[in-house]
Amino acid sequence: MNDRFLYAYNDEELDQIEDNLDVVYSDFPFSIAYPINQYEIFLEEEDYFYAFSRFFDVFEISVQYTSSLLITLLQKNQVPVDDQLRKIISSIVEKPLSFGDWVSDIFLVLLKKGNEFLPENELIRSLSEAMFNRKGNILTGWPGRKGEEFKSIVYFRNSYFGHDTTLSKNIYRELLEKIEPRMFQFIKALYPISAYTPFTVTEVIDEENDQKAYSVLLLSGSSAHTGRPIRIAADNALQEKLYYVVQKKIRRRDLLNKEDIINISPFVVYLPCNEEKQEEKYSYLFQTIHAKNLRSSSTYHRMKMQQARKPSFLKISLPLSSTNCSTAR
Image (cartoon, rainbow, N blue to C red; front, side, top):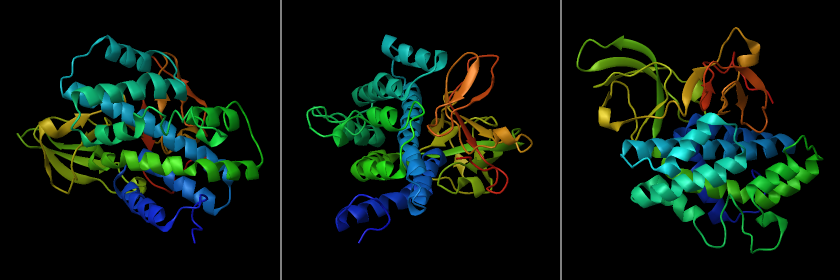
């Protein structure tokens, strides 16, 4: 009997979900693993409103994060920046974007571009198999099928959660019973993202030698916020607070080669929380871009954060410890 989730999965489906969650909590980017973990916590507490909000955080954050990674992979592989790519990049850095914008105008377009130029990439191939179906997909729904459960994720977000909509917890539970499988289908499609280890430089130790030494914090897994920095070497200079990934596991004292390091900044940057300012104690923050106001895209945490002197960027904030940097509901 399944008492951990709401949908009535069979034993084979449940085993697959459990296997995938093991990978999520150890190897997915923290900012994707965290809301998935929170979803489980709120289900256990029978707090279906907040479980519902974390459900949408999983989709919003995954789409934004993966779009940022896809842009960087295309650039690193010297895919020509045509008008289509130029339009996507400019839209990210010039105006606030809705979740619908991210899905239709950015994520799916980038995925098609990746499928055209990098068809052997496992992440692109896995997402393409899940998304490019004539009858519909996890994000946009299945227009030809009858029943509310087949509508788009944007529909559910706007109808039942967005625009200050608050309903009884039983309604949220009933909805999750219908649409919860989509989250696990999306996690399955994202599985290859576990091969990319994200990290940030916390200290420059030595840049005088050919093999430069750094202290880095690994940003993967649901417990990344309690991790300790490790020392690694690199054959090119790295910068503090930028957000890097490498397509391999990073061990203490590993040597990272220049050609393996992928810099996702400025689309994503690492930003440790400010322990002195309570209002800035958040676990992660994705920014839609606007020249003056930085606004959170997280469905449960919308607030004006600060004034920017220049165009902002997609941002992840990771607490330095679980005790002094918590996420508000």
